[in-house]
Image 1: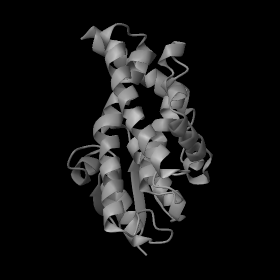
Image 2: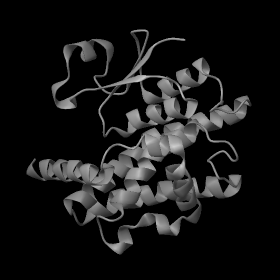
Image 3: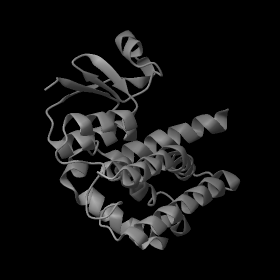
Length: 227
């Protein structure tokens, strides 16, 4: 089998997704951490968009977590992390795109507001967007019955959302009680509990992820306020 090296920034949730998949599959791999503020030339040569993760497969670069995770699932088909049915696979991919395009941007804005102590619309808008996204996830999870997003089997959708849910659970302690959105979504809360207890997800956790994430978002908020 090929030699795999995951190029990473330790706190990046997108890298964490691929780490979860590698651990779930029990695939031997290396990790190389880089400083995103001082990206090495070799990294920029293999990452067209200059961002992590990048998976080096016998030194051939593959970028974007969604693509990387599907490649790992194809290279190491047991256990499968996408359903065998084409329609179910399409549904899974759609919810991964929903995470990328809706949930992650809303959570970044909401966590920036909470960590930075922002108020008014700067706080209310992202929280409202995230609340709406969680309501859509709640409806899906309630319909499918769990414990995982598509039902009985852990899959790529679960690996995609686990880093967000890890960070958001920490972020709920940064604000006021009304900012704690998960209490209104019991199916999402139960899913988060199951995810964070899964060995592959627990093992992929960055060191001191809550405090370090809070510090990073507080810095982001201060920079935005300074213009």
